[in-house]
Length: 284
Length: 92
Picture 1 (tube, chains in turn orange, red):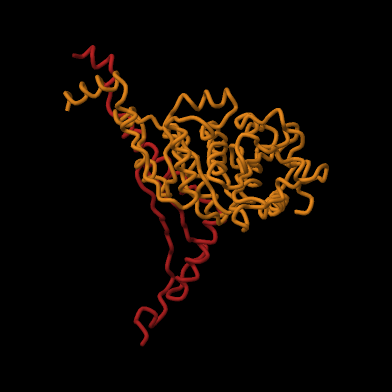
Picture 2 (cartoon, rainbow over the protein chains, first blue to last red):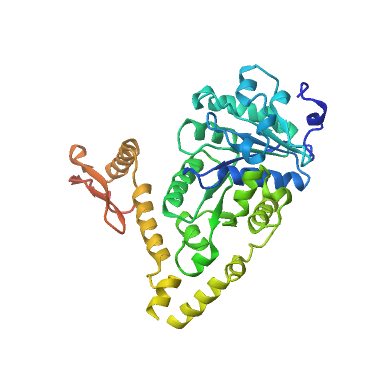
């Protein structure tokens, strides 16, 4: 892009076209945006050039999760409509080198953009980045179709609950019929101690019914709320179980073979869970 | 001991197994919720294959997906008018 400013013009670190990944879930509130922000920040920390595109037109939130809401001037609808140049709409994250946000319009609706325009936008971004993340809105309507249209790969986020897994199944079916590959699953907000007590769907239960590749399991972690309060993705600074899980997912996206975290050890740390274990052992 | 169980929440049956069973059944139903167009094209292709071997009453064909609590079946009722001579024996 001749009209990109010098910082962005340095193009992707690998010199090739970006991988375009849609983050989606079907159901709302399972952690799509948190996952997008953390994985994008982690990849930037690993030296990649990454842009996180907020594809949730009308209900944008990626800007606040990333803590960049005060720096948003233009959005990608402005780019599509020619109101501004692409480089004017991109918000550069000053905390991590190589991390950018392309915000959504807050005062527009999902039909302000169509799938062809989204593909075109991604094609403009591709030579400049290593990774493009499209943070998809909840639902299976226009917003999902727009975001999915531009992507080659997909990350499907679910929580270990029936409604979320059911919606994930629906979304996986749609992504498969659109030819997205690979489609990989993130199990978010898993509580290892509840799994241990047999009161939460385990990783293998979910993989069994969805028959899809897993890219990571993120444990429930209070630090997610702190990070959102502070507007700083956990993978930038925090040493916490969820941050580690997202760093691992980023590494797996880079093709590294990283073993799954030992979540059981987190589960057995608390005193209550130790007492619980003692009693449940006696029962059997 | 009972009150301790109650305090520590280990008195209940394992709810994750129940979740898994319910989820499996929900997904069976969701995944078989196929569109009328898909069922129509399935019907046409079945007819195409069958007419190579026999005359069937195309007006009276019934094809549907039947599901109960645990499983799904493709149920077809296809009246045969006549079997073509020689079509049952293998050629070559």
